[in-house]
Amino acid sequence: MNDDIKKEDLEKEEATQQSTENTTAEEEVKEGNTEESKQNAAEASPAEAPKEENVEEESAVAEEEEKEDRKKKKLTPEQKKYEKKIEDLSSQIEKLSKDKETLSAKLEKEKGDYVRLMAEFDNFRRRSAEERLKLVGTASKDTIKGLLPVLDDCERAMQLLEESSDEAAKQGTRLIYDKLMAYLKSKGLEKMEAKGEKFDTDYHEAVAQFPVEDPAMKGCVFDVVTTGYMLGGEVLRYAKVVVGV
Image 1 (tube, rainbow, N blue to C red):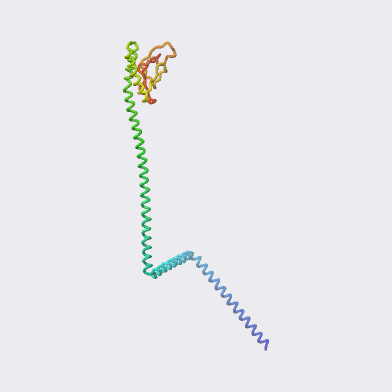
Image 2: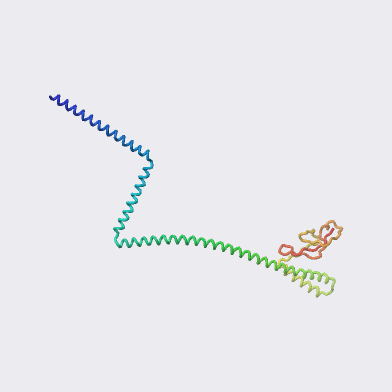
């Protein structure tokens, strides 16, 4: 009897174990099918994942906006008043920022115009100073050049008075010549010493030729007809000379 009962119990246990194993196998098969279906769905529609993320982001934004709306609805009148002031101040700050940018751009433009204007004025002042100096120099040059014939006459008068016995005339003429020459030298006038020098077309003007016996004097200034002068390193009047040949 007992053996029969034990046998029945063993059969029941085996049947239960077999049933459990079958159920586990079926669940494993179902899970494998489910995972495979998910994988196939993901492979078939790869764009669905970003769509789901976008939907989640939109939902989060909507929730935040809803929370903000609820907060505003729960605000007291005093809080709403301060909230309005904050919004007004924010608008004013934004407007002031834009005005600041506009004024900064305008200031930079004005600064550039000022710098250019100052540069142009500096150039104008320099040109004016140069032109004024040039004008003064030209006027001085013309004045001194107009006095050269007076110097020539003084020199001729002194040459003629050398044979005269009138000492007063000699001294007076010499005094006038010396004073005039001293003044013109203070203005930059220099007398050319041409006699005996090699003839140079940059400083001399040949008016005649004279045969000379000395070979060293050939091509040189034999005599000076009119004295030459220089002013400020430049030729004011060429010396008119006789060249030895």
